[in-house]
Length: 487
Ligand code: AMP
Image (cartoon, rainbow, N blue to C red; front, side, top):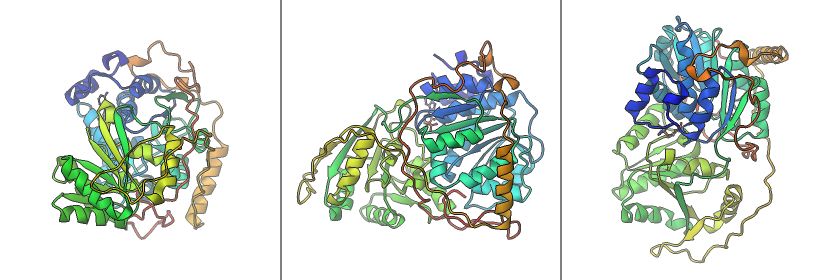
């Protein structure tokens, strides 16, 4: 299959050709016709599958059919859990729309709000945003959502994990009921299905790969090592194997700083990226890593979300993730879109249970190694695959101080939820693209196209990182001051 056969606009095809894409990835093949038809979509697709183009390309095409955004108006809103992902998606939107008469913008916390307000004055056909900053801007009348045509929830599972449910409810209370909604998530866990009931109407479901499986192009192995030798082993591997562009995951922000410092001391250029760094420092570290100026980027989980560097060859789990499902997300940073990649995890005696949990989640044992230069004092307990099904857990409810404004927004949300139209039909929207031709919007509605998509839920997690202080207007404060890295 090629992109032409999906019925995409010639100007979009031109941008794809310039980018060097020759054929659509599986998620693109499935999602693009559904979105072009105007129908709501629930897509189970992990990062690295090409999901961003899967929603962006048909979204742009659908927008071509309507009237351009007027002052402060937003026509399509893409919500992402982290600032890095927001920037990444926005870069994709700019790239794919470069030959189109459409305006796009991106807003997230941790940077000055005024330039974002100015940019929004002219309106945005596509706005990519993190939920907190979007609400701040809305409260300051910097944008209008009353004519929103398309809502995309990207990495919805992560947004729930990070406690954004209240913000999402508030946002959905501000936008028209008649709209197209696209929900992308790594899994279709129970909390995601609950979210979908509130946000999505008669969706078509597509699923490209079972959750918790790594891409076939990624090789991975475990190094058994004693804790005090982890940094030395990392330095040894980077130098000996001549690794360039290595993404290293650290459990803590402090640890990330320390690893980067020690690498630099050994003449390996490294930078740390985490929620205590200013947004400018995060952006610079990522840019330096992408350009090759920095060889090793040491990141915590939340900061790493959204890092997409094509052909990133090496990922190192300096510390194993606290949440076993994050293992797949982490190593999914490499081996993207069919490229090969290599992931290495350091495991000490203390982490052995975490390794077992990961192996249970991914359904396979990971090959063990010992580096002759840094052998552990004693070999670690051998793995035995635990094949018992994993019980899905519900994410914790985010804590919310009840301010007057929050109560008002909650009341509004409840009202909207109770007024949820029972009969909004996807057929009410006119298909914009050729891809919609001859397609029944009802066909297979709500049915999975491939695979069941019913996967174990991710273990709930609190927002792991505190955002650097954001610029907020003193008046009209609506959000509780919550710890998150996206705001
Ligand atoms: P995503 O899952 O959206 O983060 O995309 C993962 C990577 O795949 C990104 O670097 C995209 O630029 C790339 N990509 C997306 N679609 C294609 C395609 N059809 N052919 C080749 N690369 C692609």
